Amino acid sequence: MKKYIVITIISLLISLATPFIFKNYVEHKPEQIEQSFRFGGPVPFAEQQKLLPASTNAYPLEISFESPFQTKTIFHPVSFIFSFLVFFLLVLSIFTILKSYFGKIPTKRRQ
Image (tube, rainbow, N blue to C red):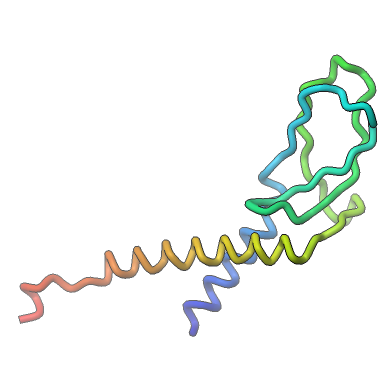
């Protein structure tokens, strides 16, 4: 049970950190200057409105996630749950593989 709690905490921390890691990329100037971008991964769950530059020389442009305390952010709970579930299963599988690999006792030592 303790293993699952630790894996849940690790997965939650990774899920909450992904909007700051993954960025959006705008190659050409869009028609509307104010755009809505979704951040996070593997399923984007945090949405922010961004005002893009009017100059065409500013593109290509990389959009970064800003802190939810500084910018209005809309969180999509279903997308967050899917993202959390993906990381939970990934960490659980890696932990299980490592535990089975390093936890085996050689057959000669058992006798």
